[in-house]
Amino acid sequence: MSKQISQLELAQLLTKLLTDPNSGELDESAKFAAFMTDLGQVVADHCGGEIRTEAHEQEGIWYLGVRGNDSLPEDGGVWKDFDPEGVLFESKVDPTWVIYSFTEHRHGQGKGFWSEEQKTWVEISNAKRYTEAQTESTEFPFTPGRDAEWGLFNKAIEGIISPD
Image (cartoon, rainbow, N blue to C red; front, side, top):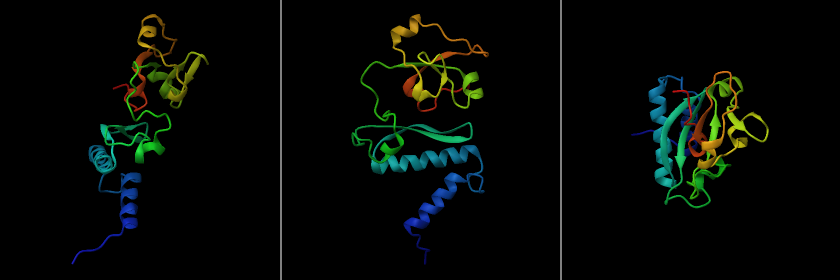
């Protein structure tokens, strides 16, 4: 005979594993990344979308890159509540670029993206977006680490820009 687990019990188990990765079962980063990626893939398989990047940790928070595809409803389906910027679907227009600084990001609590309008470093949602042509003529703002660089907005929003 097997133990029958209810959907609420399963939800509790998954919540515990995802919110307390050091509980013993998934205490290695690689194991936790694989587990979180696999769970995202299960959701994508059943509800649409595709997993674009394996789960990765950034400043103590774990992220998973999800992208819309033909199996996902236009409104974003189950992922829509977690997509306020509306980036699940690749834009059909030319890609946009942002200026990023790891030094500013680290010392500014996530404010590592340049805002031309505000003349300061901001979170990505407020960052100035540049066209490909503008990247040719725009000078980088000063950073103490002299590490300002171009990053694709759609990758940066997924957290792919990193010092590694």
